[in-house]
Amino acid sequence: MLTIKELLDELQTLTNLKITQTDIANALGTTRSNISLRVKNKSMATIEEIKKIITFLNLSSPHNIMNILLKKQNQSILEEIEDDPDQEDTITLDYYPDVFGSCGGGSFVFSENKQSVELPRKFITTYSGFKKYSIVNAVGDSMTPYIHDRDKLVIEHWNGEQIRDNRVYIFRFGDNIFIKRLVLNIDQIIVKSDNKEYPVRHIEKQDAADFQIIGRIVGIWREEN
Image (cartoon, rainbow, N blue to C red; front, side, top):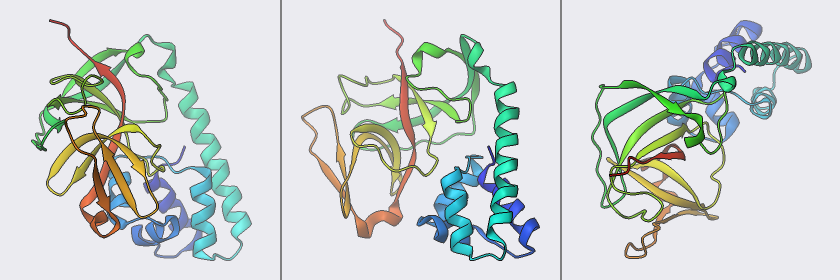
């Protein structure tokens, strides 16, 4: 599949226009910072997103451009399938031992320090060779009994998809990182903890600029004592 960056480059080549990340963001109804994050994370563009972008840009010969992009998209998929690691029992992921997602009052510690670890595929509930994954540590007890303090969490990096209600996400709000269940409401996001001692919170529409989803929790690697 084409990454957002590859799609942007292809569009500029095919149209001879200076198409920016802001244009892509407007076409997809999201923010430029979200697109920048997707470019940084090398996230993929879906066929539906490609259609939205071409429609929004109001290009001449849109059908020809769409056909060219879809051919490239399909070729990329075939190339990834040939290299698909799904046949292996383990996968290699980046583990950030000094990056902690808060399961409590909120904490954020970022470090460039990372390690490569071999993780049994059984720890990931839904694995795709087209997705990017990383591992971080959990801190706190707000998500017990589902997540324990110091669990290692497998993150499926956010790709701009719609929030799936009551799934567990790692996200930034302000200067802090949290791990909570999210529910998408009409004009707000409901933030829930599994530990009933923690209250339900809400992120209002006017606070959206301070909110950024990092990824969805798709696996828990717990080292039993």
